Amino acid sequence: MPDEPPQQPEPDRTVCFCHNVPRSRIIAEIRAGNRTLQAIRACTHASTGCGGCEFEVREILAEEAKLADEPDQC
Ligand code: FES
Image (cartoon, rainbow, N blue to C red; front, side, top):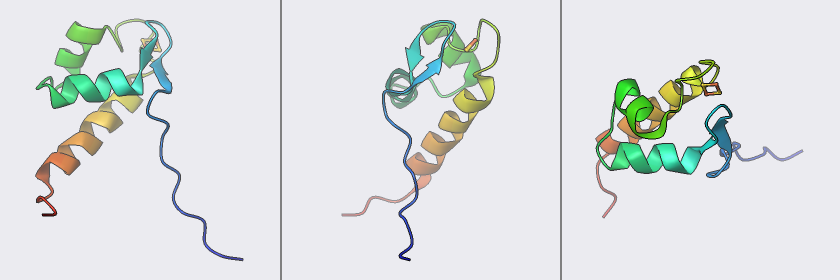
């Protein structure tokens, strides 16, 4: 049986259900310079309700920070 490729998160999957914030919105805000949990909370309201999405918001922040540290490919 061949190895399956790693699963990629769907870009527009809802991350914060309290405030209906999709993953793509969080990524866009990070890439616009909002690189902390506090900044994401302020501009999207994600993670300001029940807090159930905080871990995933932190994961997205970490993924984006890692991508920003990678050298350009060209
Ligand atoms: S799911 Fe994001 S604050 Fe509740």
